[in-house]
Image (cartoon, rainbow, N blue to C red; front, side, top):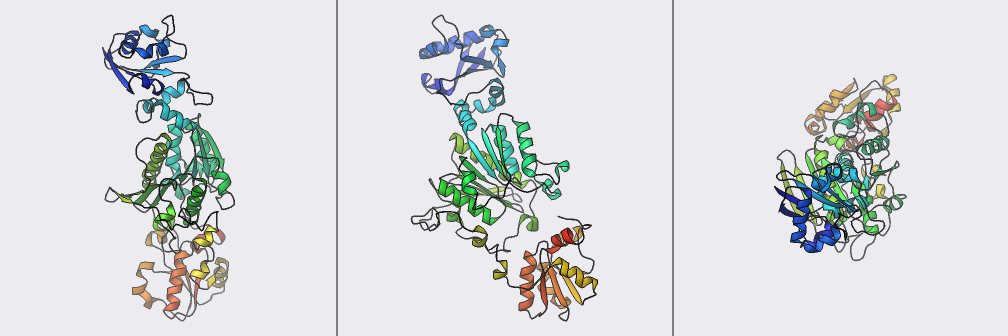
Length: 473
């Protein structure tokens, strides 16, 4: 029978670094003898002085231990694959050792020359922190746990929302309202009980990021906002750790590895964030539910490559994915010698106020318009005030929930429909959360409308504080 014998990485120096050795044999014992005939130096590592197989050597055919199948006399079939698996592998104290379940669980990794036993050991010894257990963190955490990363940390403080289920595959309908971290930890541990899952149920901030990051080798950036993204980047630079970056919007995704020791950081690509409101969130702009599964999986691949040393990491390269055209593009990123964090003379050497840096706090300084709370609006409606409520959201948002007395003019149609807005009335502009409506309010004021207010918190606040019968999204 023609069969193949897989040589474990510690013994490959005796087989001229060959991973697989092809032999002709009828039994496992004959196959082992054929291998030793080709590589005589292997003999002393496989057999003792009495010619018996050493007790720290296990042999599998496929996924079956030969000790339960006749030992070395086990017959072989054409194209059988034999795996030599040292229980200790000649390692030193503290080196990762696999049990029988793990040898079977990770057998498809062992078969890959680029990973093999050594790569799987590195995975087992590695620690990875995933920031954000949303659309990107879900698939990334699932595949890293399945791959056998020894310790995985999760950072999130949110609860499961019904709108999450379109793309966040760790959660189910019964989890709505529950802690994302709690559910994610349970799911990942049920997938692979050999992996240690550490939950950090707190918002990542300048005050705690350095403490949390210090306990991990690699950081996976699954964030959905600019302040946290810059925080992740900066602390990774300070601590000399790679950040596995991913981002999604509508049908587009981006992936890169930012590692200042070997290439550029995120600030080298984007020195400054866009102004608030210019780039909508996924809640406002939408995202194809499958897209984070693709991008999060690519982040998991880059994490595994970073741990095992397999392949070429996306350092100094930005991968762009367009789901509508089903195309991938790649662009180069260069390190910026003037980068404020990783450059030759950095001006940022510790975490800063990222909310202020990204213009999220003090929004009124960016778009200065009067505001009205939802409680104030409720009171005015009850008193019969001369109001015009202007809803500038998209049509799909209007279909989910709207105020009965609102005038609906989508933001993109506003310029052509200004004549429908009565300037004699007090105008209250609203969107989902108040960001888009702040910009529209500012525009109306510049067009000469003198009594314009932005509804603080938008229809989301109205639903939470005034009318919970409306659908939330």
